[in-house]
Image (cartoon, rainbow, N blue to C red):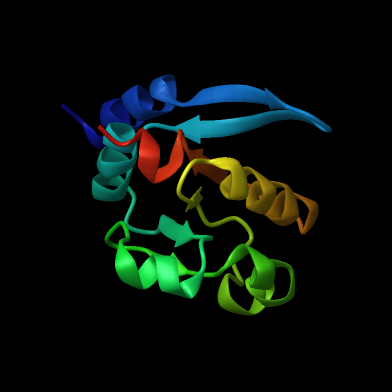
Length: 121
């Protein structure tokens, strides 16, 4: 199967979700995220939980930018606003807030991990 077909299957699994004060948000499940990382080496996974939470458990590979730092630090840590970024937290609530912040800053290829770490089976 070609890379193009694999990416097409991943995109088909991505769900959009209506969120208050926003038209929609793109969610990706854990299995699709793993496949995306295999196919797209430029994608970056961002844990928006606290540094302590990140030290205790995390997805690999991922970087930690706590939600409370995101507004100030995003553009210096994530300079490419067209890079694919997948955000996650424990349950999905903080990652939706992070999604809104990055969207407002002009980032174009954003996803949240559906259900956060709690959603991984």
